[in-house]
Image (cartoon, rainbow, N blue to C red; front, side, top):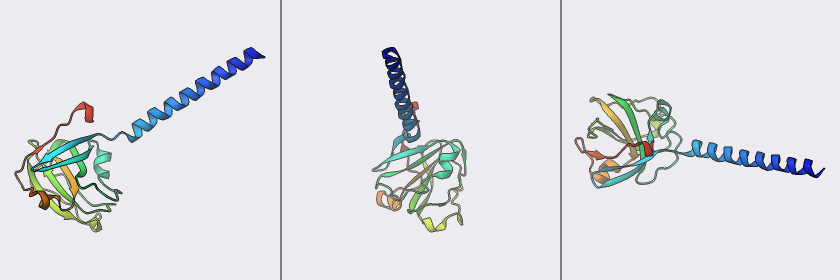
Length: 158
């Protein structure tokens, strides 16, 4: 009977260890969000990266508040006139489109969440990146077309 108990106890402990390890890995994969810092004029924004179609379509939908220097940077594989809407948004934002050289090509100030899907913002010039930041940031930091952003997208933050 003692052999049965030690075998059962060993199997139980191994099972618990496997469940805990699997839970930890699953939690990490589900909650890991790639980030980077975007420097633009005197501002430094700590942003989440959106590099796939699902995260780009979601954008900041459902976010109830943004930190003063928070935001989202959408990274696209090609240059295009990427359209942005306010579907399921809860906070107003400023939206900046940047070309492949990371220069601002177009801005929208204070995009209202009330617009929902009725309005899609789109630049006239192709862009590689779209930066969504708290409303008022463009004015606060004097950001304008032609300003160059600094940020790095590496394997460590993807």
